[in-house]
Image 1 (cartoon, rainbow, N blue to C red):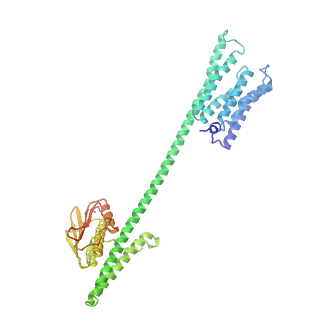
Image 2: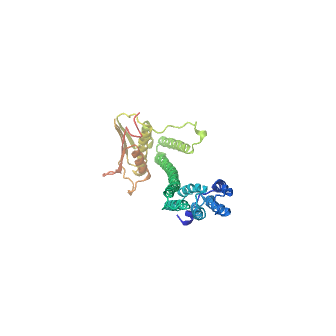
Image 3: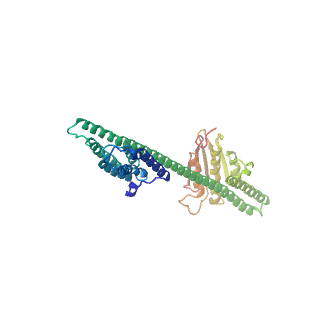
Length: 409
């Protein structure tokens, strides 16, 4: 803290100036003005007496604006009063106010200066009063008067000083609590904002996976069916018509899925009453395999257990993405086998093909494999996806029936 802040502590308002001015005026009227008609000190001129007493009261005007200047002014007035007046006066009631004000608004060890000055004045003042008419060394009454006066004056300084420091510490503790509460509130706001960003990021990732699975699979099926229909158009027109029907059905399904996702993104109030198609389930997997290609075969072991829609959608998307990769990379003569093994505790999904795979295998997984891994991991499952030693590719996912997302109900 710099010297200016010590001499003029910040925070004094116009209202404080008014209150301190009224306090100084009240002290002047109560402790100084009555001496205008008091003639006990014939040796002290009345104008000098009133000026000395007023000098003790007037520094109260800067009590909160500059406590140290008030202390300096009152100290100077006290020294003058000891010389001019040989007994105590009513203006001594100002001393507790000065001690409290310095302790309350002056920070650090500098506030103790009021105690040092007060202790010195508690000796000088009573000594002046006791020796004004009687010698201390010759009269026991003068000694008693000196000791009692000194203790009373010292108490008028130490007691309000202790109260002022206590009030200052309480105010500082209250300010610290408010600052800590504001800091906790700011941290809470930052945490909520971060959680909102994470939720938004997760939502974007989920939407990206859904769009990738829908668009990639639908386009792959449509391309394969279109190429097959073109080859069969001249030889077997009826088979070409079937391929075209499959392309149309796949396109309509993809368009419906796209509308569903876009409708959720828009969240328009007027669309809340619209009819939404349910998410794909385990019962839709046979139709998915059939529509994907006649070179894909489905093998099912066991009976499907009752699982959550989230787990059903995950299994459906794994099969869909694996078939999409099969259609894109395995080659026109490759075949694939989709195996679903339903158990009491786990569900195993395996898609194996005997294709040649892409010409160059990348070490970085694509969006499809990454999306499958994210889906399976979110359901507490395990995913394997790698080429086979004798050719082909395998995708194997093992998902628990009982997990935090797909709890058996």
